[in-house]
Image (cartoon, rainbow, N blue to C red; front, side, top):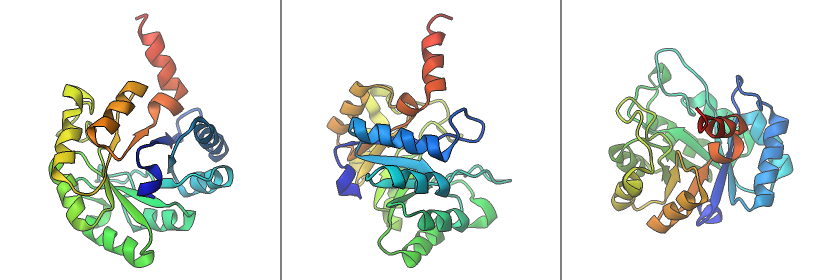
Length: 225
């Protein structure tokens, strides 16, 4: 899948239960619109959404399952349960939280990687990281690519933005890794998308700037406040 999305845009089509667009049908149409607009791939949340999206588009899909657990901050593909659901969905790549935070039920990231490869040796794996150290560790564990998804969303990086200092964090990760690096997180404009590719990102994932009309509307209205 990496080669299919290399140099292109991956559109994240997600809506959680409390959001107005929460619906597998709506997400499938969102993905279709992204495909017609030239997207190279889709990132989608949940087995049901992925199954519906696959009916509408021919693009490769990065699958995740977001689920909250007690006593753990990890919620992106946190356990074997989510991995099983994604393997059943038919997605082309599985992304999972690859931060150093404690996972639910004491499961270990290394164990989940091995579990994925045992269940389906052909499935590609993406590591969602928040630090350079986590990126390096993910490469050692055998992830096929690393994404900057969680930079700015963990306690040690909270409030930081990927685009700070001309994407300095992305540059640091690129300098340290040999596997492809995906830029994701607060990429708001076409110019930012282009800059990430110029710096060496294999691909760029954009979600909120394309598929979250509530947040887009709020940014416009916010200019009046």
